[in-house]
Image (cartoon, rainbow, N blue to C red; front, side):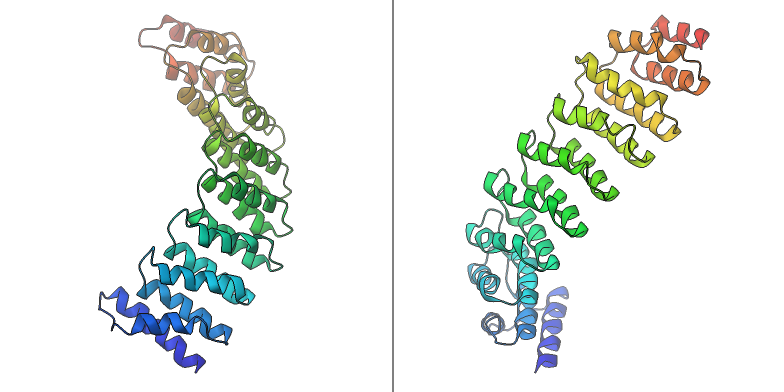
Length: 306
């Protein structure tokens, strides 16, 4: 019987992929099987829902909700994946059914719940966001990584609580999670956010070169051109030992600073272009050329000095 249900599910998906219309009695049969006592049959039936029901189908959503509340761990994991495709964003029934699974004893269920909420949760929902942020302290690395993605998906830009959570995530022992938090700050941090800027600047001396590059790129998204202290944090990248970080610094400065910005040009010429390190002088001059207006004589002067 279990094997037959597997074949049944594959046939339904194959029909949909080929654009072949399904008989009218298929949908009721699939929905009925989601209440089967065997978890495997239920899971296969849930997967078939994607093929026989459109997004927003009320019966499909309620079938998933029922499984999320009463199913085994494997059924709940499948239902999380399926409801993410059948429910529309903001469906309170689906969100209410998935959210409790964030504290499931099974790591793979917690992961599926976060992934599902990324698609169906209401952006800016403070209560939901808080529940996802708590998973940043999850014992499983893969759950913590997905929690960072979930925060990016559900937080509004500039949300101080979400920014604070990602800043704390920069201290995670896993390098990939720290990298995801850096990227997340670039996406949801507001321009001029001093908390995020300070946290990213502090990564310069503690991270591997690939994360230093990411931190510089993120700073380029957050720094305001009229903030001298923040601009100075970008200039540190020009002195980095890694050439890739230096180039990331040039790109970030070009992105953050307005063309012809007098303060930044003078600051680079007075400091980095006077460095004893030939490579620092070269990349500093490259930065000046990138932001100077055509005909700015200071570029030529910088070449002569360098």
